[in-house]
Length: 384
Image (tube, rainbow, N blue to C red):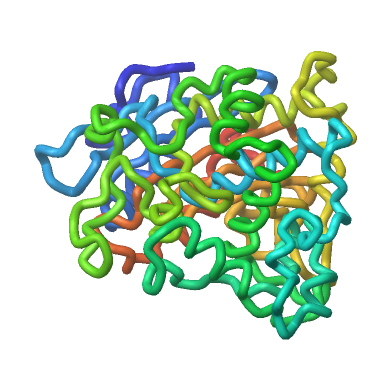
């Protein structure tokens, strides 16, 4: 379903008739805009083997003359890069027998081990650990404060201390995915962004998904913030993440831009392998074994991370109605992608919640409310 532009409804009653089923979804998002959780959003739902909702609300910024967000509007999806690009690449390489999940990172990137004091622990870090965010590496480092080139940033990343025994501590790690992206480039002998375009985005027909939008495209993308601390300018149509910006806008952890239609199409490909709800597709990009392997929580006990993907936890952004057999990911800019592998349901929410700065955390309340409203709509208002 692709209803006409719906970014200026005065009330639920003003919505197109075909959207009445999802009135609860619109109410959640309209309230979010009214309370300045974000100025605008695009959103979509895939269920029963088809897209049943694809729409938009609000504007690029809070200014009344700002452009309206449209269903096809492209957003900076931030860490959703980790699944749509990096993890997808890892899944394909694993499926083709070219990636050993238990290969030590040091075999692909010797600089991670050679010449460091903590070489004993570093030798234990595998690609599996990086994907599962339990490598022992720190969660986030402001490399951009002290380096100016990609080479300098990669070197700084290679030299990070391994702070815990790999596998024993779960800590979501951007540096881990920066290194994973570089390791995959060693395996493919090609730039990760180029390889992902050729092997993932292109075959799936993800025509709006890309790294580093052109100057002409930037004005069509909602701005993420007014950066007063690093670049000292408006950030629009270029990656918000500063470390990814140092890495020329394309890295294993961030840099991807996409829209609702493309992300629903990507999720449909994940669901096409499932025996639950939709028939198995012999021409699917990923096999069911691959999806099952990467959707399995990795530990330690109590951690929700699978391989690249997150899974539903007790207080998940996916809300209370997505099954335990769900995978997804969030983006710092305010985006989310959740896929229920049991129900064959996907929900995508794209926002620029960091506009005009990064202070508001209201997105934490909006996300579960949005997903609950989606599932209630799909079940005709009956709690699951």
